[in-house]
Length: 128
Image 1 (cartoon, helix red, strand yellow):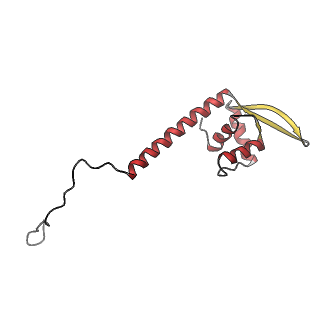
Image 2 (cartoon, rainbow, N blue to C red; image 1 turned 180 degrees about the vertical axis):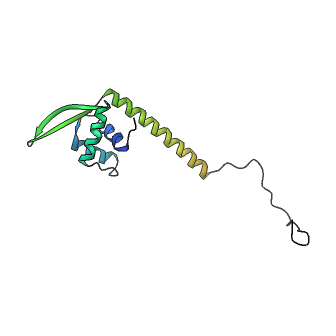
């Protein structure tokens, strides 16, 4: 399963407690420091996909101010998928960081570079 960033963040939002849709939106905003802002329509698409994969499930429903709030919770399969995805992303980030570190501080070449002590003389006619 390809876990998108909004799916990944929604799974993280459900690790510590069940949340209703708006609570997930707020937690994703907080986790991403405002970088990912889920719209309600997008959120329910994410939750439908996560539910279909067995990664989240409805926890309970409550009526507040005449509106039904459905709470979702992370399943054991969801926790496993989140752990695997976090490890995959961490490995990819480490590979990128290692290459960037190498780029910034290249290893010295095995062969020393020599600067000629005098310029090479070309024969008459200018051909080498």
